[in-house]
Image (cartoon, rainbow, N blue to C red; front, side, top):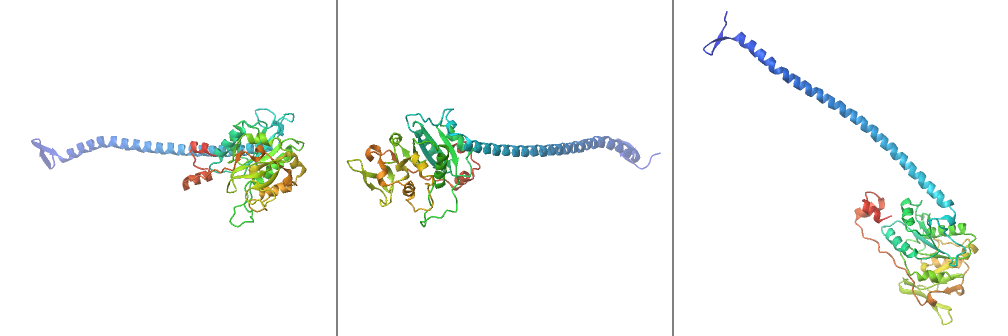
Length: 363
């Protein structure tokens, strides 16, 4: 029996039949959609689970890396301690020089102990490179390099070693609370470093009576003939120095008899009006006067003079070198302070974010 219908295709079609067909059609369409969205949900859930697993795996990996970092840092500290221990206990005759003895007492050429205090600054590597290449041609020279720091830098040690020189690497930190006698003056540089070198010489070369001790700054300029001159010193030798004391040359004035009669220098009234680069002493004086050392408790410009006074010397003991003080073999040159942008200086001072090539330009 037909109920109310609609006219379609030239006849009547029952509404109940229409609903049945539409329901069948709807069910046939919805099933794939349900399956599709179910698949997406399962895929999303699976992806979340994989991400959680990866997250946990990364946490474990990060923890391992942190552990490895701590282990490596501890190993670096251990190696630095071992390097310091070896540096302090190693006998002088087996110091680095490609396996050769550092000092041959039977050598006809008396040794020169060349003391260089140095500090961390942008031009440090450039200054030391220039100096090392000068010292490399000088026979039987022991370079005593003293870093201003709490410990020797491993990187610095590798740099010094690369030149193949006879050397010893020490360290001594300049105290920050030192007061000076002169207002507005920053104070003496290199005091504790030079004293550390003197202590090392007195300790390790206590029986050595031949040779001379010279204090050579890292930015001075040296003619190799200066070293030939100083080997013959009996007590204390002196010579001219260029570009120092606001003069073109500071020099002892020598008469025709080879006697020093005056000084062309800043404040000639000093007991010994000489620059640090203007003299060297026989090593025997260090042993004869073990208390002689440099001090912060002196006025500006008097460091050298006061040290020589502590060695119980007089002007009559001074031996003029460099052809009776007629030649200039050393210049008190100073490396100009580099002009760096604030960001560049911060990188250098913190030693952070330096590129590979930037790191190679400094120590």
